[in-house]
Length: 285
Ligand code: NAP
Image (cartoon, rainbow, N blue to C red; front, side, top):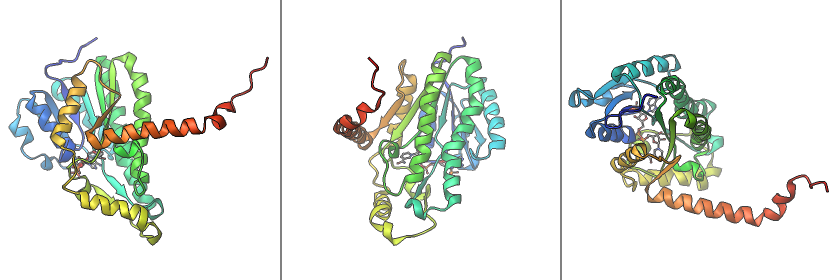
């Protein structure tokens, strides 16, 4: 088995133009690790490669362009001769009540957040399997801990990604490949500012639910408690651990949310146990 070079891992990150992707790119490079930074428009990566000429390469990658993903991942693997950490970060939000969303909006959100990540994973796995090592890091969302009115489809894209990631973790562990799902709460990135698409329709009946959620998001922009640079340090710590978590929950908001979700789930399960538990076949004497 070809062990990863732990002092200088090779990272591939999608969506490095801003937010988590850029913060993680900078943190990885500051540590002297090697990076293939990708973005839809490589010009959005600024002087990253010039600042780190020995350790950084940039490539154009729109994760929805399935005809190009395999070729770009192959180029990325050639850049430094291997891939150790692949971060599926590219994504955007879609907010609005389910009835207000257009079919094309729904499909496009899945194409980026879910199928885009799957394409990257599909292109990456043969390389990681051949190496006998690697780490997939998939950026999820607090909407998976429990979802909000107004985030039905965005949440669904991330739930789908987590469903695949959990199964992959079990399939890939014996092959030396690790999987970590990252669940951030609200972080101060461009997510609300430019990566949050609004529903194309408007139905006044939903103003008190999803409409209220959108107004809340808008007031939170620029004041989110999460610091992307600290998120990057946490992700690197998880990758460098000998026992990385399946889920890394980022920030106080998301940690509180997980604690509440687990307590609520157990309370509801116990309350309904007398109805749910006897649903098995009665054992024959
Ligand atoms: P951001 O600063 O707006 O970054 C989003 C990134 O995704 C941008 O680099 C964007 O590239 C890229 N992207 C979008 N569609 C793409 C595509 N088809 N192909 C390649 N790249 C694409 O927001 P962010 O918060 O860092 O978002 C990163 C991830 O974190 C997303 O998956 C998001 O769902 C998740 N997340 C964010 C938060 C939060 O509070 N910030 C919370 C939970 C989860 P362009 O510059 O080309 O648009």
